[in-house]
Length: 158
Image (cartoon, rainbow, N blue to C red; front, side, top):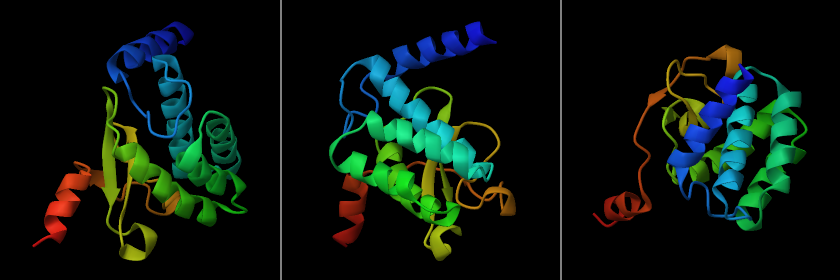
C-alpha cells in the first residue's frame, strides 16, 4: 500500500505542474503536492465529521502557506467547532478549485451548502463526499466545472 501511495504521489506530482501556486511558499512541485494533500485530508475529514483530523490537516497547511491563503487556512485551523470550520473551508475551497486539479480529482458543488448559497470543493473523483454536511447529507452535490474569474466578469457585465 505504501508503494502504491508513493507511486500515486509521484504521478500526481508529475501531473500537477504549478498547482496551488497562489499563496504557497516553496515553488517546488513537491511542495504543491504536499499543500494539495493537506487540503484533501481536511476535505475528507470534514466529510467524515472528524473535527480533530481536519484541524490537524489545516494546521499542517498553515505551516506550508503564506499571504492571503494562509489567513484563510488559519481561520479554519482556529475554528472552535466543525460548523465554523466548514464555513472557513468554503473560502479555501474556492481558491483551490480555481487553480486546477491533478488527474483523478475534480471540483464538486453542493447547491444546499452555506444556507443554500452553494459551495464548491475539490475531492477525489468517484462518489461525492460532501465536506459541508458530512454524514447528514454525505452524497449531496455533483461534479461541476468551476467558473473562472473571466466567466464571472462576463456574466456580471450583462
